[in-house]
Amino acid sequence: MRGSRPAGGRDHPASRSEDEIENRHGGAGPGKLTVIGLGPGDPALTAPLAVQALADAGVVVGYSTYLDLIPAQLLAGKQVVSTGMMGEVARCNAAIDAALAGGDTVVVSSGDAGVYGMAGLVLELLETRGLLEAVEFEVVPGIPAVMGAAALLGAPLTHDFACVSLSDLLTPWERIEKRLDAAAGADFVLALYNPRSKRRSGLLEKALAIISRHRAPETPVGVVRQAWREGQSVQVGTLESTDPESVDMLTIVVVGNSQTRIAGGRMLTPRGYAGKYGLGG
Image (cartoon, rainbow, N blue to C red; front, side):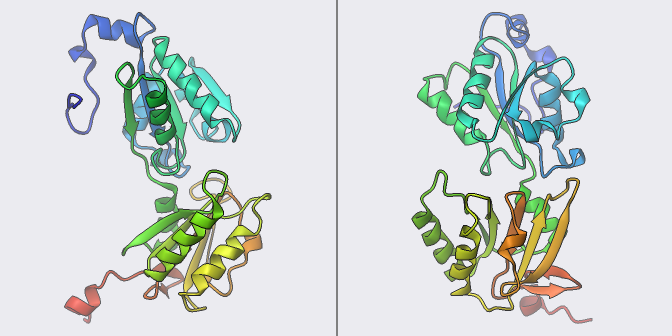
């Protein structure tokens, strides 16, 4: 088991040996490899530990769209490695190489790096390359995109929910269908990531049809695009009124369960307090 450190913070520089400090700044031996999530988009929602990791790093690696969300002062004077959407493996290998060369390196995801993000791929590559013990590795949690969307919608996730990505680039559609059907049948609130793209224009329509086997047409549905970013839009409607054509890859779709209702234009999924305690005045 790896050694522990004080909760809520990184090791204080004064507690590091001279050799460790030298390694952090490009000396002999690997640097630290940290994977962070930036949160939904607004810099104010980036976790302080993630901001600190960026400040400490000499190399920052990420998808170009996500790097654009980082305040310029946090990237000043650093080596920035940017790739396009399909460059995940090359991007993560470049980050590992940078850490092996001796520099503290940060890999950037949006939302939380462990939710459809780069944390898993970096760890998998470290395993594949036999570097699990050679490179110090850390994941800093962030606010997942689904939580950013949920906050804008009201309170749709206050009972059991499931997140399902509709992207079939890495997961066969047949498996996604089974997961959708099982989760909808179990009455989970459903948060749909990657709901639609130009290449996958019909998958959201198929997903909503599967969910409709288990949900009433008037089930509340929230559609949030560009949550906590410029161009943000938030819509609350119903399962039967949801238009797949209005959705793209920058959107999260939240489908309520059998108890979800619309309250003051917001989605509300009750936890059950009214039935147990009564909420009357």
